[in-house]
Length: 175
Image (cartoon, rainbow, N blue to C red; front, side, top):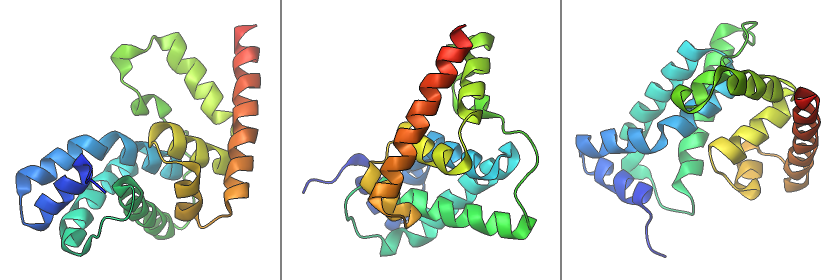
């Protein structure tokens, strides 16, 4: 199986290539940040997890063995760091999540950002996590199931329920 660009970059990182680490950061920053923000609901904590994820990749790259999609390996690192941060915090954040920072602000009007925020907030935490892992991170449902240690049927059910809620919320916003 041919290696994808992230696999090749991780291989270079394993050899100590710091430029490759900067390249990897550019390749995965939106995905890792989006996931961390969805879990932590705090921009600063999500940025910390992004940085910590990249540093953990630097430390773990020599042990990495390509087995499918490297993004799943990277998001697993981010997931573990998110849960460590939640444990340190002792509880989930009560702050509202700034989902605007997931998207390029210049690409969206203020009205579009408000609609996206309302739509995302209409989902419960489990649904939001599955949607962000699928839509923003780009993982397949099987990869999400493995990452979340959940049955595929549960992931599919959450995703379908979320899509239904998203459609309903979007239709309500149009009125």
